[in-house]
Image (spheres, one colour):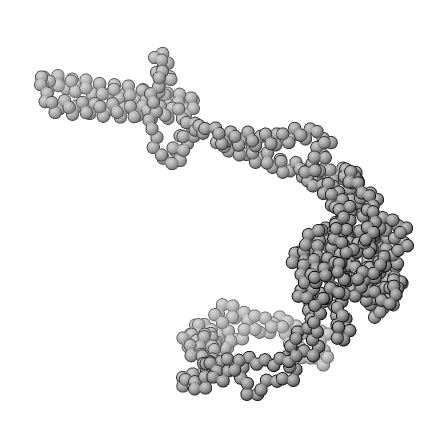
Length: 614
């Protein structure tokens, strides 16, 4: 019984503990708007100090977009048109702007933002000097923040190939030759992180795109979390590459082995003029030519037949159709037989068939044909003329070449961003082209790491919101203390206290299970003589039994005296022993009755006990 109310209290406390934080959060949402909350969060984490990184002199390109004037002098918006599309959408009229991030921006930090969507946009910048693939690695690194997520579109960059003279960036379009394309791209559920390089065939001079294998890790999160992410590509002179996302390796491999199509074609190819001989047999199994169809095999036997044991039910109306014309139907007045055809009344169920087992022609039901075997086919055996699967002979590949240094790609002269996206507010930041991994890490430490630090400090979870709300309403801390203390006290009470079952619980359990119970110990203090109303019924019944026994003994003595017979002076020992045993049994019966009456008295109310005594 005690555990029941304790469990009820514990459940109530837990329920209050669950509902209270929800109410706190809802209350806070009602008090402040989303904009005010974002401003408050940014004010709380403003201690993250940002300063524009110093220019890395050895870098081929380093762009932080913090200096708007320098950006306008260096970057060129394309004035070209796309080929093969309608005139209305052929222009690169996407809108670019240099501005701070919409959420959790560092003070003084800006980025290049694509403001428009569903428009072609292109912009480019020249390197300080062309990058040549010689003995140092190529390191490309930049940030992307899909501030509104991404539905369909890319955020990749192109490393434009060097040409005779410098690249004319005003004519930059989708046909402009590039050496490497790198960055995220998505449409629908297809998430990609491109690394494509254009390889020149040393024999023919043709250019072919080589696509890196897909990353081994999932890359869906950057497309939907609306946070900045750092993309890094490292291509080394030993023909290996490495792709990092937020400074963690998600893809790596070899330029010679992990691209499709492969850089080098196969040495041998199938002879296009080789054909399989007519006598060549590729069949491993053939039908047994010696097999014959059994005489009792009936291929024409149907799969089902009419049940021969079926009997037409008695009362079946063979002459009555199931459907009859409606006798109450009338031809419409505007019915024209020439225009509408001959009028016929609608069909209804035959009322005569309602009480009959059926109407119309009776047919027995169909059952599976026990003699059905289907079409006979001979068994299959090993083909003695089997010669295996035919393959054309191999010949030397006339187009074979072997480029063991695909790292030596076309030099890079500029960086371009050419996109078409269904999402706007795509932010690019902290772009660097260098041959030093240390330079890229240094720039990341001074920019991207600070953004991550601010995001971590500015993330407002449920606990933080409850804490902020509690600071405004200090009385809530008292409730929190109770929410913690009450369950602890209840658990300690339930686990440490000894269970003490009351007599009422024991009696109730005895009534339910009929479990035998031990005799109660005798009372230390017998009731007073002057309070007969409180005497237990057992003692009263015992006294009544003794009185009746005395009456019986007196009656027996009177009968002996009346008959003139004197009692015997001597009694045999056996008779005395039997009388003693009978007296002991009577005493035990009286004691048991007294105890049962006493127990009944403790289980009843004083009013009921008084009524019983009366």
